[in-house]
Length: 198
Image (tube, rainbow, N blue to C red):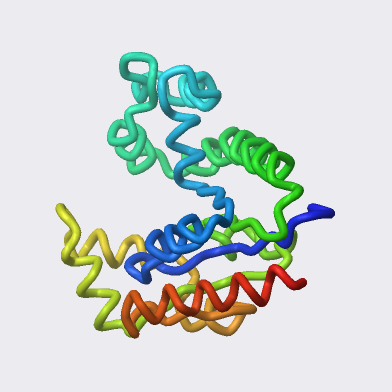
């Protein structure tokens, strides 16, 4: 737990507007740590995750970086591989996050953008959790508009995520992005004011 900053976790199922919401926080000057970006950094050339993955899946390393397509294929072909990868990558991600929190400990508020927040039990160490949500029809439309997305892939991703209804129940704060971007941004600014006072 950080002594200084209020650590707000940000999460939401696919297509709920989490990345857009994170950008609203950034635009308002709130430091945001992004779990996905951290993994990308670890998997890039020279990243700490490259050697860890190389030891498990040598074929997933191309030109000194992790080839995510090759890694995905290897995971599909080996049931236990994802768990072994998580065992080596999660500590690296945690170290990156801790570095961010230390660097921003003087801030009144920081945000940790974590797609699988409840799935990885991150709510145990956060000060509060903001869940972004939207109507199921809006969610499906947003996701299906993404390049290369299929109904099968969408359903597979959804199956791995805590259901939206459960996320809403466990949230400390909720923002419905289905009500429009202006509404969501206003909600973010209002929440920032509330949390900075904590």
